[in-house]
Amino acid sequence: MNPFSTFLAGFLGLGGPEVIIILIILLVLFGGSKLPELAKGLGKSIKEFKQATRDEPAPPPPAPAPVPAPVAPVAEKPADRAG
Image 1 (cartoon, rainbow, N blue to C red):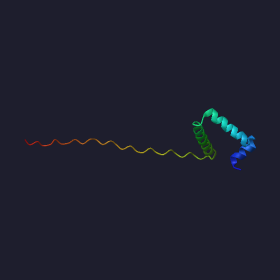
Image 2 (image 1 turned 180 degrees about the vertical axis):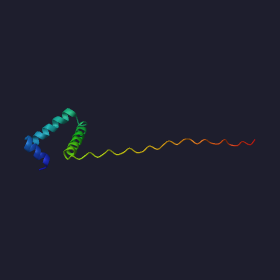
Image 3 (image 1 turned 135 degrees about the vertical axis):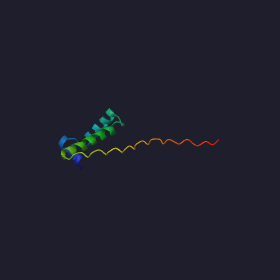
């Protein structure tokens, strides 16, 4: 058994049919397009919780790419007119 099913069976007392019914209810309430967003948010929150429990500082965000300095236009010399 994987840890998630052990958690559901042992702690919450839920079996396979109960979990399927809960998933169907969630699908009806939130719709198919919203469920991946909810799962992504849940995954991020679990990841943040695990980092907080390890007492490790979060990695710093990547530094933004430097913006090149603008180049001033070079003034052209007037062309000599022979005429």
